[in-house]
Length: 155
Image (cartoon, rainbow, N blue to C red; front, side, top):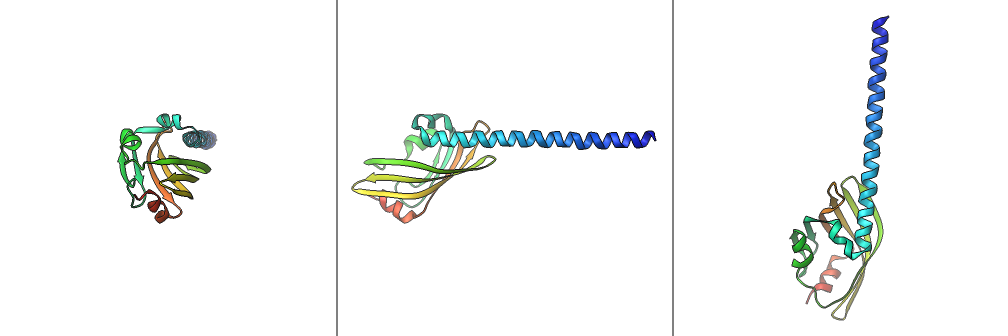
């Protein structure tokens, strides 16, 4: 009898303990996902907040075959080291969707640009990997029509 009570108690402890751990993990995951979504929304909404939402060690993969394509490592290179697409009269993002899976976020948008009598309006996406502080540590660019974007940035 004593062994049966002990076994039932042990089973209840294991079941209850694992359920509490599962709930804690789910709660932490939900909070992390929520934080990551808000961080990315803020990044697209307010240019001044990019300093807080981009890691100083960011790695950025610029898409395509144009003067601003390529790999950029570190915040200074990402923000100031990219070749200038001057004169860039307009470059605005309209955020459409933000989807999260842990440390990874996909942001879809429409970008409007104007440069050297060329105008562009196209759909695109960024795949972003975030750190535990909700900062972007790596990003990849995607556009609906890369050839059109390459032509836009061509001299």
